[in-house]
Image (tube, rainbow, N blue to C red; front, side, top):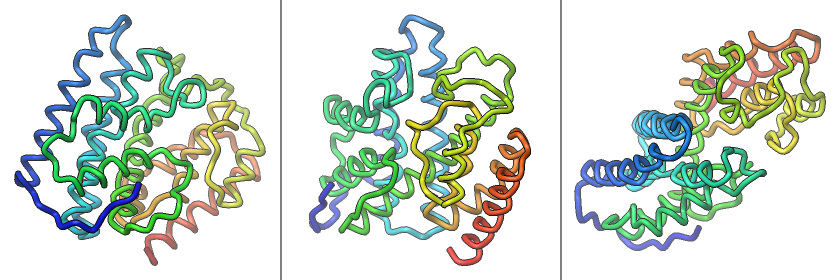
Length: 273
């Protein structure tokens, strides 16, 4: 989404804007808890959003990103999954291919509900752009370095938290909420060879090719190739997410080779990022 070079004029301090938008997000999300069902999906996304904000703040601080980028990234982290709430209410799935693009839904509802009201125009555009781009398979060419970095922060923060959500889900026997893992087939010893082949070529995964729960695990491990900051890679390694996921996969020569490749590539990213 294009951004002009107009100067940043902040009507309120950055922290006040972050708090205000956070309050608006909660006011938007809370009524969904009264929807039919147990409210699990909505509670999951509310908790996820808070953690993504914390991760975005860590990345922005560690990478010393410019003020406007950091503010847009923090606001984008708070609002990136607004569309998940109407998506799940209507379709009862988080799988975009079977419902609607949740990032586009997020932008539509942010605008409809005026969740960024009072935010300076340039920051508002950066935030909307970061939200819209956060679930793209890969980022398109972006002329604005501010938008590119804000989107990268939101993408990395979102993925880092989803690791923890997925690991907790995979640890359950007969999970009550298979929608968390996109309702894939739970066959513990099976995976789709073409999914692993693409990841071994360091290609970004295509969710449309996922069939089995191990495909989802492999795809999640492959998110390393879409991490954009050294801080993100540091968090990924320190939290042990990749090793935890590999420990749950079947063992064969191809998966062992992918494991070695991932370890090498992560070490290189930490050395050179």
